[in-house]
Amino acid sequence: MATESLLIKLSKDIGKLMDFNDECNVIIKVGITPNHHEFRAHSLILRARSQYFYTALSNDWARNQGNFIKFEKPNISPDIFDAILRYIYNGTIQLDHELSYILDLLCAADELMIDELLDYIQSYLIQNKSKWLDNNLIEILKITTSRTALDTLKNYCLEEITLLNPSIFESESFLNMDESSLVALLERDDLGINESELWDCVLKWGIKNTPSLSYDINDNNWTSEDFNALEKTLKNCIPLIRFFHISPDDFYTKIKSFSKLLPKDLLKEIINYHLTDPSNYNINPPRKCNIQIDSKLLNSKQAAIIASWIDGNHKSYSSKSNPYSFKLLYRASVDNPRLFHKKCDNVGPTIIVIKSRDNNCLIGGYNPLDASWKKSWLNPSRGSKECFIFSMDSSVKTILDKNVKLSQVKPEYKNFAIYDHPWDGICFGTGPDLWVNIEPSNPIGYTIKNCYQPSIMNSDIFYWEDWEVFSVRRSSNNITDIDSDTISLYD
Image (cartoon, rainbow, N blue to C red; front, side, top):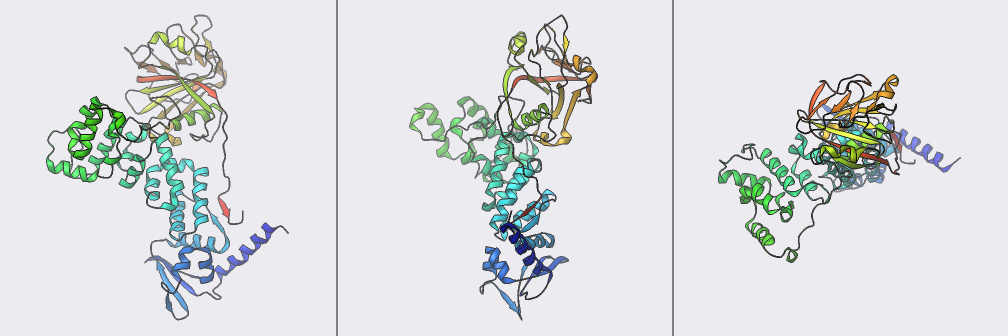
């Protein structure tokens, strides 16, 4: 018999002790009345498996009543403690539960100082439940920033937030972030946001989280008491803003009116920095960008979702496992419309992303053809069954399946999936299922369902704010997942 089998048999035999009261000498009251439960256990096993219990059951902490050691754990629910106790006895734990349950398990494991369980649950969540995490980044960050043992999960959340830039800073979630989470975010070098824009976001956060203040940043009726209240709210954030990397123009327009918030010595140094030789100052470097795509519309998480559609995967890639690189070819707000065909024709597969002017929506499509958007009067229709169009929320909530709509070309219309035109830009299908006027003077677009199914928009007409075209190339990357929802100490 293999050693692993012997260990599994041992764990099962020891686990049976939980179901019997033989030799139990510990009674633990868990939860708060009326939702409480008393558990009986063996001090030797508890002390051997948990540093917390090793200390708690010592002579200094223990409260003896007759033949039992008694103490209470009101801050852990009975069902969570039952799962932890079974893990202590038999080395297995069930993780096929809702995220809130697993987070409670994680917090209990942290409090009870069961290190190997802490490490495993964090790895399990990151590798298996990334969508859960991505939908609750701010909430999870709040839990992890106060617990040093959860640094793995905290660092994951912080890195994912930087990959969601700029949408995370524009979201309501950012304004509701607690101070410790915001400080942890501001300490990073890879936020990928202009420092003056970051200041704007932090200022909005400070105003939102100072109850006595008006939310209007441009309100000119602020009193000294208002500034003092805001200064107290931002006292731990202001030292983390890299003011030296804000241009004089932005400093004058965005910060001057709030200069009362800055320490006088710091304000003097900033002025001297711009008036004298900057090399004389030892300052933090400018923040770098953790975003792997040159886009004002698309973040790395959204790019990973699109990449999974290209490969026909039901499970989305993560930002790190995205096997495609997106190279910007054309940006409507910058490039002359006459350059569209020059930059985008005959470059291979392309992705188009359009920002709707009137709602928080991104619209786009995938053209897998090598000829891309060749301008032609003759035989303008062509295509492939791999063509698709889509829409998604441009905010951080894009990661939710319910906020994305994928529409694939119908088999009978695959030869009409793409249309070329000498002076028009992109066109998918004969509806047109997706088309935008290339001229900024009339930024109109259509999404009339015909060749693609289902519809990606509730309206047939939209107006665009900007749009971008990317060349899509495959690069090597590996994807690793954990399949099991149950772990064993002896696996």
